[in-house]
Image 1 (tube, rainbow, N blue to C red):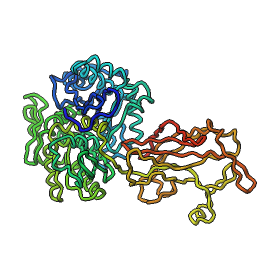
Image 2: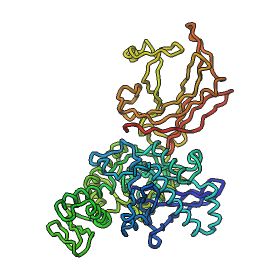
Image 3: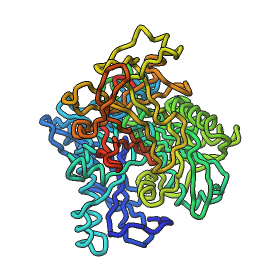
Length: 596
């Protein structure tokens, strides 16, 4: 456990649970928030099927289903079912790496194909699988906390009274993924409804959660000085997440983001995938040239050889069979496959190069960063870390790993994120705005070039389609709780035709400093989601407008309000009634674009 710095400022006692759903392993941390007290981060160190209690305990992110789609085993119990052969005897269906099915479609890598990611059963959705896993993880946490914490009955009341959650996710994820995670939490029974999920579930990127972990670790203190720029590289099972910060002050510590957080789909599972492809080719024509044996050997490599690999001079031994399993021609002696180091290191190299490229990108954007902290389970691999540290030292960057269990960084850091809030400025990775029309101006040369596209509204006004109305420019420094507002209007000829309307939120990721039209650099625009403008209920606020040309129509003026201060976008519609501002609920219905 570790201490935070800031006393909890709430007025009621509260239970906070942080969930790190990893590609290969997951973790839970928690704290009891007592008003005026400094919270203490605690970990759930044991799970069913795990022998004993371990401070670095993680739950394997694995489930088994039967043909009907019913959960049969999860976590360590799922791994036991594999080892004993029960899963095979019962024809259970194994589900792993399910988190990656939620990834944005733009989060890809040329070295990785969709086929590399194990499929979800046809009778399940990824949201349902995530819900099943969350339900199990939450019950494990509840059982441990209520049976081991002093005053267990009182803690149980905290569970019943509205536990709050922080969930980590990769840097590259956004609103669509957060929406699905909330839906899964509702299905799992963590919260009773989507409204409650909006109130009681917060999200933090894995990069920022890892930052908080590093700040609470004493081994990093020499680097935490005003003016220093630091980078966090969270190398996990599926993704590698990078975040960079400028330390503005210490005591209390305040930081600013200096580069857009980035994410690479080059975590440790893709080392396994490359190893499996190599082993398949190496054993082609042998007695072990069948999918079952290849899968078993590749699995044993992930459990043993990958973790222990340190240098190209090392011989990697992969135990998988018995003493009668011998085919020296293929490197198999007494049930063990022998691989030379120069065979193994290519499994790691694409990940290493992707991480180095991403670090260089962060440095180009974020300035003279000389300190990189590596966290995450993949960072514990000696070959990966030593290679990266040597390559970075050559360009003047000091790389280190904090003490302790860095594979728990996200869960612990997510708790600290809830209470500390030390990042005061973040970067807008894309421009945010709306897609709509723009009033045609005959004196504007840009407009005249679009004369062929002019459309006339029901009110008789000439407009141009495909307009992008930017509310928050790309690269903006986003301050916590600062709102970004743009004014719009609905216009109708017939007052009785007024209906509620959806406002489409759009992002722009291109290079134009003033994007104005969605059909220019169209590939850089993405539909993010929609917010409902409650127009019909405000018909009494319609203004009768005379355009001076004998035409009259009704106008409703409203504002789109965006807030991007933490790691989640929030949006609503605002309007004025009797001199007072009114607002719609904060809600975005996210859509998954065909291409990210």
